[in-house]
Every structure is written in structure tokens, then in C-alpha cells.
Image (tube, rainbow, N blue to C red; front, top):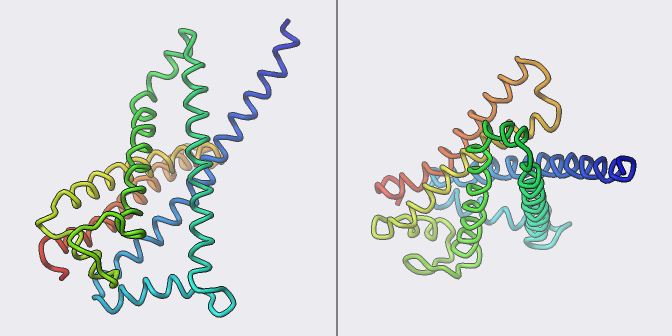
Length: 233
């Protein structure tokens, strides 16, 4: 009986490791994306011409070799595929963790990481809902806040006016969730990829998580704050 269950156990462990690798690699893709996206949003401080030009160049990348918006659509497909893989692997690992808590030892082992793991799950759900809202607002313009504008800059400014403060609240809460997700995600990915083999490496991974979380969340929320207070018009 032990012989027959061994292959299944090994397969499950290998699948778990593979899912953790998927989580780590897709997580790196998302960190690179949010850093680039944050940099683009900071163009708001350069004024309408700078921001609109940035938005236009995203659609003309690699022209004339690539068609208009061609590279942008490739990036969207890569991000969508990474998102599906990230969510699927997260759900698989969560299901495995739930099944593994059938013995006392495993329950005790999981206690220390319960709060962090729970926030990663619910924080991930929060970010997923926010991404849908963000796309509907700024990409498809299905959700209109203070009217429609051809200018990406005007669209951004109109979205964070004091009269629609609830939009700012949504973004602020999403940035809190993003910061915590990045902090824990960088640490988890570093462990999965074998970058925490020493005490020094663990400290560096932990510091990197905090630094990235702080930089990204502040970089994203600063332009809406300046719009809200009237410094960006």
C-alpha cells in the first residue's frame, strides 16, 4: 500500500513546486509591469503634453515593423496569460494547504503564516477586482467618471476630482493591498527561487520587498493625490 501511494505523493510535491515556480515567475512579470506602469503615471507631473505623448508612444512602439498598438496587444496577452497562471497556481496552492491541515502538526506549522497567507488571498482578490475596475475606467471607458475625453491626461485628471472622491478611495485601498501583496510576494518568490539561503540573503529579500512595496504604492498614489488637491490640473 505504501508503494502505491508513494508515486502520487511525489507527483503532488512536484506539482506544488511547479505551481510555486509559476507564482514566482509570474510575480516577477507583474513587478516589472507595475514599475513600468508607475513610471508612466509619474509623467502626469510633466503636464498634459508629456503624458499624452507617453500614452501615444505606447501604441506606436516598434512601428513600422509592428502595426499600431501591436506591441501593446502583445504585452496585454502576456499579462493576461501571466494573470491566469498566477491566479490558477494561487488557487491550487491554497487548496493544497487546506488539505494539508488535516493533522495537528500541520495545523501548528501553519499558524505562524495564517495572517499573511489570508491577506495574500484576499488581497489578491481585491487587486483582481481593482484591475477589472481600472480597465473598465481607463482602457475601455465603460465606466465614465466626469465624462469622456480623448486625452488620456484629461481622463486621468477628471477621474480624481474632489467631487468623485470615492474613486480616490478605491485607488488608495488598492494601493495598500498592492503594497502588502508585493512585500509578501517578493519574500515568497525569493524563497521559491532559492535566494534566501543565508541570513544576509533573507534580510536583503525582506528589505527588497519593503522597498519595492513602498516605491510602487507611493509612485501610483502620488499623482491622484496631487490631482485631488488641485496641484495637477
